[in-house]
Image 1 (cartoon, rainbow, N blue to C red):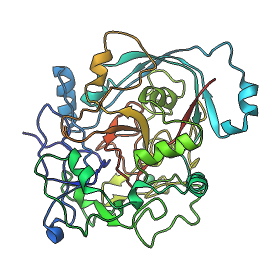
Image 2: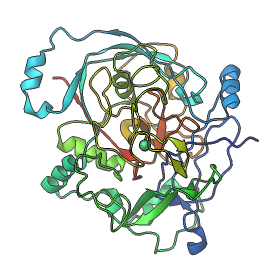
Image 3: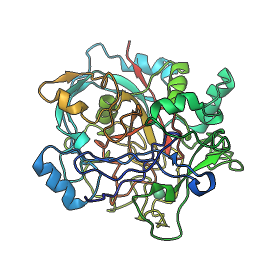
Image 4: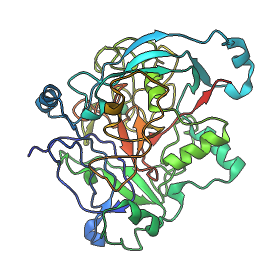
Length: 408
Ligand SMILES: [Ca+2]
């Protein structure tokens, strides 16, 4: 059995369990990290996010193994753009509720990956038709989320005490209840290490930190003061949903997100096209150097960067690659694309339910775009076709969201 590297995305879900080794052919095992296991004597499921490549295609399997990376690569091609004749750009711009949003003309494209970095869940590439929609030009910022909280009094998942009765429903039967000292408002915070570590053990760099939430992304004592223009993080899928609903918007589907990320390019691997990450000026916020202990900061940031720090893509969208992962509306199913492969799908909404073979007890929602922790040696999450997943109650220091809006 080969242990594959996984990328630093965490989809922790706040549970406990035990680590599982990667299983050949099943993809990335989500596994439970022992967080403070010595202290508490149990394993806290930090989230799992390791992807696995469930390759049924021998060629794809070989390519993936050659790279020894669990990341998945896609080279999507946008086939056509066909904006509706009724589209009235001036009218959209005149509506103040659309401020900060970008019109994406509908069209067809090939969704999914096809290069050696792609993982099994990105296959097969399949033709998708997406209707026109509006999407936020940037990730939702701390200032925007503050307005939502001020207006509604909303309390995020990370700010609430975990409900063990709910948590255990998403864990393998028999998972022991963690100590009460762990079941307190908390979230997952990244900590770099002092040197190379076992990359199969993400508990080396993710910690369940009491007091960590959107206002304190790194735990009690940290602050977002002065970071009003940074993406809000430590928000769960439920939090993102609540914000979008309040704003009269919704989360994007994976199909919408990927279509928008390509910026109108054809066969583009990244939001800017195909130019390699390290060529030229910094194109996004990622992890440059050796993860998780050496960050060269060529892009100037170790963690999140203010929105609009890098050039937008062809649609005028910022940070569709890197900075923070972005929640999507869809349930995550590793085999979803296989169910669509024989036909053109219009506005796919994702599977009816979640299925992650590595954590079948845990419902997952999809994430896109990669984060400041992504690196080509792991997930290459900044590829436009890259898929990630996490339990909807998970908050992470490198995870935020943006919203979309239907055209009326
Ligand atoms: Ca960076």
